[in-house]
Length: 344
Image: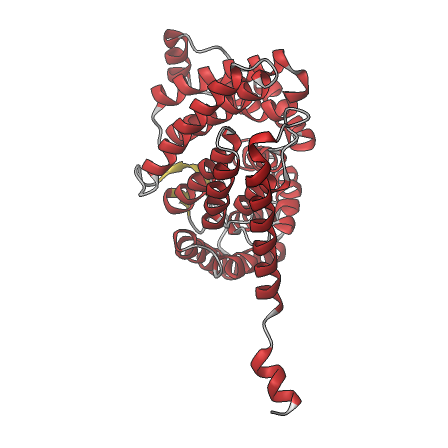
């Protein structure tokens, strides 16, 4: 066999080799942690091993199925740690969001076009397990603060899905308990404040901007009030200082800036960074395109929508079709000169 033919037969694409190597390394690290997991102690509340962060990175990159596999491996290595399960919670949420969220050729909004998903059962079961593990963690004085934080994160995830589906009573009930858990976490360990601020900031903002009817409902139900400016400040703090949830806070803040506050330039700055850091996530690129369009940057908007097509081609089935359709429609509109939809 000549040298050129040998290279043709045996050559593997670089992207494949790199991805395979990363997966092999991750499995090796998790295997080691599985062996030492029962004896492993976290030095500080959020000092978690690299595979936990890897699972979160997979979610941000739109690799939801890989994140679920990572979560299962982490649960075997750390059967008592709620974050191992919360990785799966966030992965299921990502698939639900892609599959049922209000995503089209003009906008992305945080409400559902469909009220159910095949992933509902797995999502709710994972939330419940994470809550149970969090409550067990709270019984130990050394881990009580982190346990309260993780309980708040789990309740926040459930509240987010209820709000996404416009189930106001359920969303408010969960959000009230989330707030109490996160405040308890900060009271026990102030170092947790930046990560807790993602949930607290979201709570403070949305409770303060509720419609008059929903505000009346809040008073009747005994839901604590919010503070719009404080909520925005907490989200900014989380987006800059959080240990685990910095990127999630940045996306939430960008969505609020762009969709609700009309601060498109500020939203675009946050989304540019997210889209560049996670080129495999079509949601970041699509919302960046819409914010670029809103600032008058049509050429940048077209570039981002092209990036959505590239990312969507590698995404899971639940995201591929919807993201591709939205990006193609946006490109057709942008190239045809149709003005953007600026509904808030």
